[in-house]
Amino acid sequence: MAGGFIFGGLLSVAGLLLQVVCGPVNWDVLAWPVNIILLLVFIALLLAFHFLKKKVGFFAWMASSSAAVPSIAWALFLTIVMGLTAQIPSRGWLGSMITFWPFVLVYIWLTFVVGLVALNHLGRLTRSWNEVAAVLNHLGLFVVLVCATLGSADKQTLDMTLTEGGSETAGVREDGKSVETGLSVHLNDFIMETYPNGMPKRFASDVVVRDKSGADIPGVIDVNKPMKVDGWKMYQYDYDSEAGVESRISVLQLVKDPWLPFVFAGIFMMLAGAFVMMIVGFKKEEK
Image 1 (cartoon, rainbow, N blue to C red):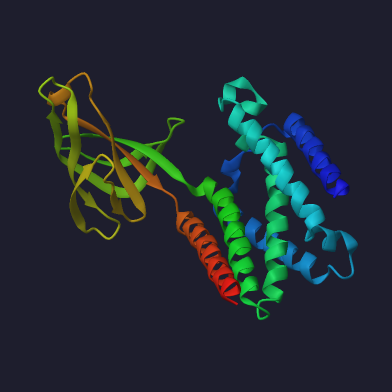
Image 2 (image 1 turned 120 degrees about the vertical axis):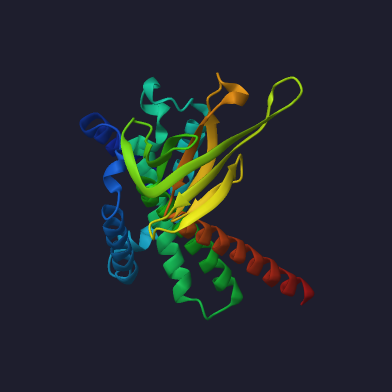
């Protein structure tokens, strides 16, 4: 166990050196197809560690509680630091923990340990329902950690400004770069409803979206009621606040996250694991 805490410390030191030499983690370089290649390499390493653990002591240790507990403790410590530190990149390393190498390396270690433990339980799957619950819990957590991390580079968030009667095909990223969406969004009408004092009560966009197949899809995009087309979620985001109720401009936010369904799948696996554990517990209590 002490070796595990030392190992976490060495990872953190290595991360600090990488931070100094290479700068913060650039998640953009992991966009498709790099992320899927890394995933395959990661799984191959997991399988190698699992099947060679009887021959290599370090491989066996990585799947033990002596590695699991320190990896959780280190990840928890760095997450607490993240929670107590304002996440503003301009404030230095701790102001952007998701690009801070020690934070990233520790979470890679934790994910690797979780994957090895899942494989261990998978090998004992037929022994009892407890193993089924353990597989679902650990494998679900592994899927969430991997897909949320590797999928972040493929997530796109764009702002699209529309004028009544006009159409737009591109959105603008946070860095100001224009990106084609593959859609054509036409704004028929910007809808604004106000309270008697003039405060906005509702604002929405009456649009027609032409998808990649050329089909025209009418819809009304309301606040908290996005429209889904070709993997994009289109949210009502803003309008010309100076014009107020007379605004003819609508700003939509378009979000595409192709890895999100896999993250949800992992969450549902953990929920299923918890349900199986509950059922097993009830049966033991009855006996």
